[in-house]
Structure formats: structure tokens, C-alpha cells
Amino acid sequence: MIGEGEPRRWAQPELWAKALPSVALQSLFFLAPLIMTVLLTFQETRSFMLQWAWSLKVWTEIFSKPHYWTVLWHTLWMSALCVALCILIALPVAYALATRLQSLSGHVKVLITFAFLTDMTLKTFGWVLFLDQKGAANFLLEKIGFPPAMIGFLYTDWATLLGMVYNLLAFTIFTIYLSIANIDRSLILAAYDAGAGKWRAFWEVTLPLCRPGIWTGAVLVFLLSVGVFLEPKVLGGGKSPMSAELIRQTFETRVNWPLGAALTIVLMVVAVFVILLFSRVYSLRRYGAAA
Amino acid sequence: MSRAGQERLINAILYGSVAAVLIFFYIPIFTLIAFSFQEGRYLILPFQGLSLHWYGELFRNSSAATALWNSTLIAFVAMIFSTILGTAAAIVAVRYRFRGKLAFLGLSGAPLAFPQLLMGIVLLLWFSVLGRWLGFNNGLVTAIIGHVVYITPFAMIIVAVQVFNFDASLEDAARDCGARPWEVYRYVTIPLLWPGIFSAAIFSFLLSWGNFYLTYSLAGATRTLPTFVFSGIATGSSPLYPAMATVVFIPGIVLVMVADALRRRAARRLA
Image (spheres, each protein chain N blue to C red):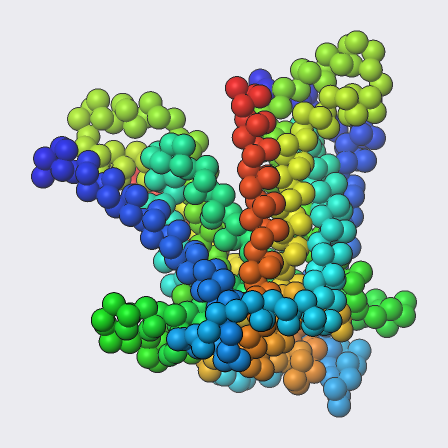
């Protein structure tokens, strides 16, 4: 088969030469910093200076102040909404890209890629100009004779959510597109032959087969969305902070590294826990359906 | 509903969703382009007049020029490192089977799904501790390292697709004809992987060029375009930014189109 090498072992120098650089990079600048962050949470801070003294002070503070947990809860809700919207919007788009549009598909992909890769701060600022009370949206609405609708939308959680979906949507479009493009057409044709309508074929053949793409996209968007702070600050007006903003403030304004490190770890652990929980429920349900 | 009616409805939904998403993606981009041609000091509609005034201001603004230079420098260096590391990792990921491969994949792919701000903070802590020991400050180099850590997995995935479509027997043939290992790489492997490597390079450049979160945490006092813009819009909007955005869009769309043209040519050659 194409692309299948014979089994190799670590002993081979060729393999070492190619694997070592990225292993070294990620161990030194991803894994090691992560471990150090965990260790930092057990230190203390006195008059803005880090003290290497082992204690549980930071953890007792986190578990005794409900404020951190309300912010975290708010963040998880926003991220869950963002994931749901990204999937719902990406599904028909990815399906159309994979099955319709023929020659246009390439151009649409270029346009989406460009929009995805363009400077995030500038795009987010573009939304401010569009949604502002004296911005483009209201101007255009008035031009065609509608009353201005964008009053009080900017600087709310909804505006934050819009920005999050905007900046992360491309991830779900790409992952779902890839899984639909890899579906064997003959399976769908077989469903038609068996008398299934378009909806039914989509529901019973296409959708289950593109589950891996949906799942990958959802996990990716969820993990990335729990860490946003640009959108809440620029579009949400900084009024209802999300976890990332709280963490940034802890580092920058309060200069409390152990606390900031602990909040970072809590956010990551909770996010991974949510994903594990969902994948567990998901596989249980599938198992139940099969039985 | 009749079969044909159903078909028409489905097509309407599918084409409609693509059109809607494209409009959605381009709303802020076109808004910025439109605002870049306005004359007045305040970014509100209706415009006071149309002019290229702010483009002139932009080119006279030295901190904007420095930010642009820093962004380009960081992106260029990060592109070279991430593309090389990503290519090597992609070859390992697709072509080799070995014990500990899952751990290798997990480690090389993990930064992809790690929130950038948190990665930035974790690295910032690391560099601060290291910096205190070894006596360095955060700046260009730390920002580049952060970008390479984040972007290498992207490059790996893009090249891996190319490696996957690559016929390994071509390498064996070269070896059978007596080529040395480096000759096989130089004349067979790299040329065949080139389209993938090139798109990975372009993708890496743009990801680094537009990166906000990592630069924000790791660049110290050095400003790049995204952090320059952020520091401006956090304090109040300046009429300079739309013009700046429009200037930044041009190389971006050109590079994405070049990458796509190369990908198509490679796909045609494979077919």
C-alpha cells in the first residue's frame, strides 16, 4: 500500500534525526513549561515577588472564593454556545463544499482560508466598526429605510459570542469538510438505491460518517474558545470577563504568578474534563444504540 | 413535497449557507477597507469625505513601520523553523511505525489544541524563570520560539497530507539504483513533497504574521502589527488602523492564492 513503510524501531538513526528536533522543541518549550506551571501553583507571592516556598495558599484561595468559579462557569457556557453555533453553521457549508460547487469550491476555500489567516485583532476591530451605533450596519439599514437595529448590541455577551464564532468557525468548516470529502460516494448511492430520500440518506449515512470531523472540530473549538480574551475585551467591552481575562489580570495587574498559574491549570483541567465527560456520554450512547 | 421540490430546497439551503458564511467572513474585512478611505478623524458614518490621507499618515508613522518590520521578521524566521521541523515530524508520523508513536503524535500535536493565551502565559513563566537564571529578557527571540512551538503542528499536518499521497516505492527505486540516503532526499523525497512543504511555509508565515496572543505574552517590549493594533484599540480607536488593515490584507490574499495554485498544480500532476 502507498505510504506504508515497513515497521521501524527507535534504534534507527534516520528516525531519530527526524523525530528528535520536534520532540526536543515540544518537550523544552511546551511540556517543561507546563510542568513548571503546575509547580508554581504551590508557591507564594509576597509584595509582588515570587517566593519559592511550598504552600497550598493559592489553592485554598481558589476553592474559597466563588468569584473564580462564576467566571469559569460563564466561560464554559459561552464556549459551549460557540461550539454549538460553529458546528451548526459549518455543517451545511462543509457539505456544500464537498458535494456541490464543483469548480467554485476551490475559490470558496481560498476565500475562507484567507479570512481565517488574516490578523485576528484587525478583523475583530472591523466588527466594532460594523456594529457600532454610528457604524456600517446602522448606516446601511438606514439607507434602505429600516430603523437602526444595532443599538446596544456591541459591548454585550452576544457581541463577544459573535466574535468567538467568527474567529473559530473556520476550524469546524475544515475538519467537517475533510471528513465529508473522505466519505465513499457509493455508500450514499446505496442508500438511494435502497429507497432513502435525500434527508434520510443524509441523516442515516452522511451524518454518522462525518462524526469524526464534527467531534474533532468541536474539541478544537472548545479548547480554543475557553482561552479567548480579545473578543470579550474588544467586542464585549470588558464588562463580563471570561477566565482568560481573569488570568491575564492576575498576571499583569495583580502580579500574582502562583495564583495565575493555578487559574490556568484549573481552566485547562476543567476543559479537558468536560471533553472527557462528553466523549464518555457519546460513546455510551453509541454503545447503547448498537446493543 | 415532490422529489424535485425537495432537491431545490436542499440546494437552496446549501448554496445559501455558503453565500451567508462568505458574507459573514468578509463583513469586517470590507468594513475596514471602506473605512480606510475616509477623510475624517473619527471612525463613524457617514464619512466626511473620501481620501487617501490616512495611508500617507500610515507610511509616515515610524512605530507602525517598526511593528510591520518586527512582524515580518518574526514570521519569516518562525516560518523557516516550523516548516523544517514540521516536515521532519510529518515524515515520521506517516512513514514510520515504531513503539511510542502515539506519544510522539500527542506531543507534536498538542500545542494545536492548547488555548494560545494560556500557552503564551505558560511559556512566559518559563522564560521569566529561565531569563532570571541565564540573564535574558523577553523579546524577538522568545516570541519566535513561542510561534514555532504553536505553528509546527500546523505545518506537520499540512505536509503529512502530502507524505500520505506519496509513493514510497519511488524512494526504494532510487535506493536500488545506488543513491545514497542524502541523495534520495535531495533528488526524490524533497522535490515530491515540495508542494506540501511550500503551502506549509506560506500557512506558517501567515499564522505567525497575524498571531496576537503569543506575541502579546512573549515579545516583551517589542511590538508587532497585531499587538500594535491591540494597544491602540484598547485605549481608543485611531483612523490609522483601517488603512493599516487594508495594507496588511494584500500580501495575505496573494500568498493564499499562490499556495492554492501550487496545490492545484501538484494535484494535477498526481492525477
